[in-house]
Image (tube, rainbow, N blue to C red; front, side, top):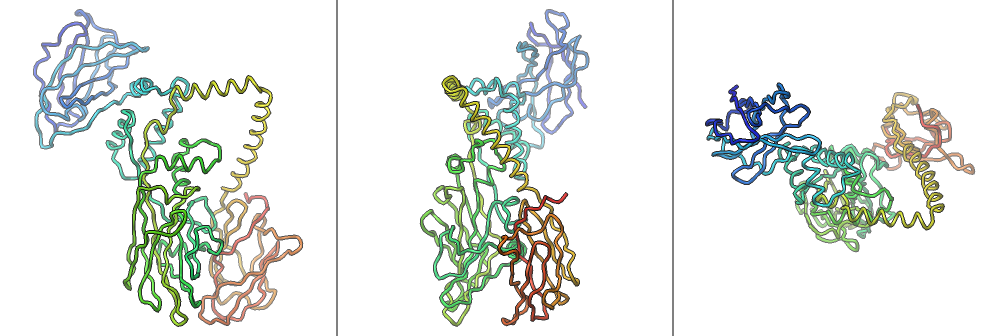
Length: 542
């Protein structure tokens, strides 16, 4: 540690400091031991915030707070230089400033010289570390922070956390993004969507959905003919290869992937959108900050026509921009755009992948793996905060309306509170999740179930030990997981998917409010419970 003892004045030039040389490699070892005078008298710095300031030769500003207050009453403190202060070579001019209750004083300038080490010059841009300084600059830009100081800081914290979770940017890069925002510039952020940890039938963990269909035509994204992937299909999509076989003559094997950009971004940064449930309006706001998107999927297709898999994107009226894989191996098809036309009114980008049709002799087969989509947004402070003028206009309109119909507004507010509380209670119920639980079933089959909100989901495999006798008990439902069935038809029948290849084999089960029972089973192999689900109105367990 190298220590330089400095006697600095607030009233006289600091000509007797002497030559101080700082080598760029000497990180966190250059210490300034400072005593401050005013007309040869010690300055009482009790209660003051103290900062070291510099204007670099490259015109960038550096500012850092002093924390080592040795004897503030006698104007004595210590500061260890951070690398921001030697980003440029040559003679650097500095000064200490002292601030309390909105007033500021400072020492006369003094200098040191930065000399070359192993590292090269560090172009770190403008550094404004003190939040009060940021606040003043924002207010100069017309942003209203008078009553929303904490809210402002929380929003910036959320913004920074959003960047940190991307695991893409270093701390220095994140700090620079904040500085760019304060300076009125725009910053970009890119997010990736895929189907990892996707739960079939649920939008809680992941707002995007994957579906499949066998059809001769390329259906619109909202067509009811599509079938959502069950849990095992979703698992194959990210940890293997999902194979879609279309055995019907003239049919194609088709998969569709709907990536909900708006919902994904809203969950990351909800304060950008008003709490009004107006999805269409919010999506339009999202499109204004949308900059670009990129999408892709690994795929392979085969049919009587040979090897061919095609990917297209939906442009709100048709499937466009074909990309093809004509090999016998999985290959990634991808594309990108800067046009938000591919995002629909709900904020969803839809991607379709398909094989050529079945000719009646050869099955149409499509294999897909790891579909994903990136989207990039571009933000400025104007996208995050309202100006004083905007807030004043809003405030005046509200006051005028309250004066005209005060009682009606009060009634509307009371009604809105009741509605909001009701909806929040519903939402709270919806997002409750028990996690996967192993079912106590007859034999040694492995079945799992979980409840998310008011839906019960089942997956797993029934093996040879699954009972074959009609009306045999398979599984008695615990309270909290019993199905809701219509009063006129208090039971439901399901055909399970057999794991063998014999087409005549069949497994049928029945569920009632209390239990699941076997109805018919003529195969000796296993069967799948994946995709089985039902609603329940039981009290949530626990």
